[in-house]
Structures are given as C-alpha cells and as structure tokens.
Length: 304
Image (cartoon, rainbow, N blue to C red; front, side, top):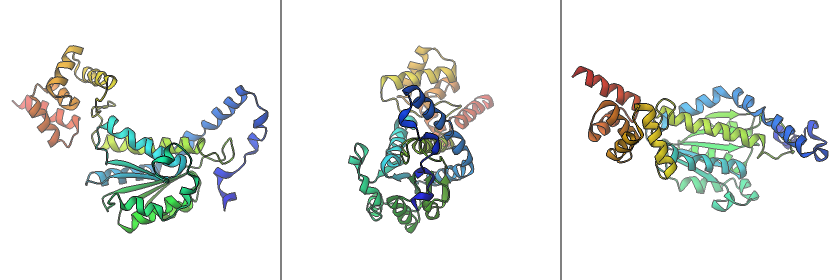
C-alpha cells in the first residue's frame, strides 16, 4: 500500500542530496517547490466545488471545521486561528481539530493519527450538524484519524471535503468533495511537511479566503471586515478607509471613532454621508456586503 503513494516515493533526483553544498540544497528545494503551484492548479475544479460547498453551508448558519494529524492538522489550526483577526469572524465559525490535541501543536504525537475512533469523540464535542462542513486534511490520503472523522461527519449529515496529496487516495471515497493535489515525491523521502505541506497550506488559504470574499468580508481587494486588535491593524483600518474614500488620515481616524471601530460603517459614514446607525442598517440589509450597501446608500442619495 505505502509503495503506491507518491508522497512516500524515494526520488532518484535527490539520491546524492547528502553530498550537496548548502547552495545546491537550497536550489534543489526551491526547484521542487516551484512544482507545487502547478499541482494545486490541476485540482482547481475540486477546490471550486469545496469553496462553493462551504459558502452555501455558512450562508445557512454552518461552520467550517478542519481536521488532521501532524503537519496537516497544524496547518488546519493555523488557518482557523487566522480567520477571526483577518475577517472578524466569531471564533467558532472556522475551527480546527488536530489528532493528539493541543500538545500535538508543539510536539509530535505520531500514534494519534492511527486512532480511527478518536475523531468521533472530538467531533461529537463540537455538536456537529448537517449545517457544517468538515475538511479532512491528510497528505498520504489514508490517515485513519481523518477517515474516521469524515465517516462520523457524514453519519450526522454534515458535508465533507477531503484534501490529500496523492491521486486515488483512500480518503477521497469518504468525502462529498475530494481534492487531490499530486505533489509527487519529496526532496526528503516521506517528509510531507515539505511540498505536500506547502500544497495543503495553499489550498486551505484558497478555501478560507475565497469563502470569506463570497460572504462579504472583502471590498475590492481590501480587508474591510478586519478586527483592529493591535496598533498595526488600527493603522491598516485607517489606510483602507483612506483608499476607499479618499479621506485624509485625520478624517479616517475621526470616521472610525464615530463608527466605534467598524471599518465598513466608517466608510459608509464618509462616502455616503450617513449616520453610524444608518450605516449599520444598510450593512445589515446588504448582508454585510459593503459594495451593495454603498450602492444602496448612494442610490438613495441620488433619489433624494
């Protein structure tokens, strides 16, 4: 079974790796990494299906839950952790479960990935339902913990997505949408934290980012729903306001204070000349889409 996995192959291209200079090793790894984006591109149609599935579920109150082991699990945790500050999402909207629990984020708990039934316990504690989407991430495509998670998710009616880095992966048969990114042999045989991990990170980036764009978290290519929890993000909010409205720094600062830090509302206050309360009402009617709220506000202004 393992000999059929591309991620477990020992490539002849790298048989003399231990004799290479540092410069040569850097070049070898960089060249190998250049193939990853093309592998992700070949999985485009299935990635689109996955995003559409997540968007449709979130629009009806569902959540996105990543689950994996080892590097794959850590990448899921990373993507989930970035969503609240980047898109101002509630902490439970995008979640992640890693085999072995929190300890596995900082040290290897290798045997945890073989525990098929452990995923049931983890997911049942999330009150999983048919509104949710579970994305199982496994480079090999045969991790028992991930397969168990997808089977449990389907048993309660949740939608499922499998992400693997081998073609014809076992995990694909356990999901509604199967994304297979064939990254081929690693520079270091079986070290899937390399090309496979890079591919997984790219796909998870696309899934979460494309989903949030479709949910109205972005205007143009600007993060208008960010949560300004530190000085850098406060300043970014002001710059975004200035870019959209053409305001000065001082005007942006004042508008954000008026809108109590709500960047979308601050933009509406300045651009459409409405009150904070009207801005919030317009955004609510537009389901959070700033473009729609602006068009409505400016249209009303013209009509008046």
